[in-house]
Length: 464
Image (cartoon, rainbow, N blue to C red):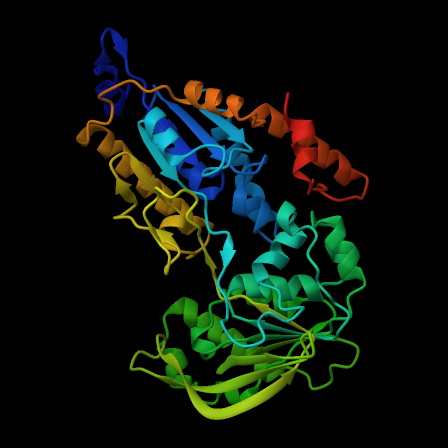
């Protein structure tokens, strides 16, 4: 028994040992990593993971690009956590609709909110309501199987896409739309997206950023994939690199130096002849000012920027009086995600799109971790580190805040509320049925899996 177990074993309610009951809302990486850490330290506990959808894994299932299967290997670790005797998964439970935050606080010693960021940030420019202005988040959900995005009205009949934003999500969207269909067929991309992409006329994708190459947010891995993409040529604007001297490159920190050198080498090696090829065009120092078209996107007005600031990596973009027009058929804003206030009792910063918290703690017994508490930053490893730190904070506070001063009803009481509202619940065994079904369906198409995109179908298979 470790020290935490000794503490908890010594806490008695009458003659009964009080078992720490912890509820985690959100079955994505943040939730599973927190559960993994907590269950290792708490021998005598009940950890329940609630998820809005009937299926687990959140961003790993619905956010990771179909051609990045290696990133999804973390699902094996999450599954081991879910199969621990002290951990339970309950899908198809919606915080704020099926249960309230007060219900959870009344029945658990600790409530940890990790339901992520599910809304997109807007450009807030004229023309954003035109047809074929589609946020990257919705396109990702469309090809990854988020039920709400399965009927996305996306028109790929034109030849040019403009993506605003230069993070990894923006590059993912560009790469998926420019990847040969025969390669996509080997992935778990949804069939409806595959059918649509197979008829796509998109030949050029512009990746547009407000700042310069030194401030680009995509990683070297994502850039390398684009540079190696079959039947596609990356084309840079030489003038975008005119201010990057050899001396500047030499003084950059290693990660930034490596990606800058890769961009410069690609610029030096790029071919002028792109006939018959798809074209990927990163463009820097441009801000979207207006989207124009007759009901549908036809072109965008770009403002030309200059950079200001002493720190070369943190310079900010300032608009000049110069403008340009770019003809395009689809506009994809990819400028970040934000979270929503799932329950009115959650202290929430509407402007930042995060739960108000102090190093993961919201108030006594209530915590948050992952993008819900930090805003969308970093990669899955960043989320892991954040979740482990939050779990440590919870372990400390269970003792310091005397959170085990009374017994709690846990899922026994919550299940009564859900039963009264006739909410069907998918447990881990139910998810395993869904998982098996998807894999079997995938085999019919020589794919790793064919994701179910209909919630009712998930429930039909997953509810005992």
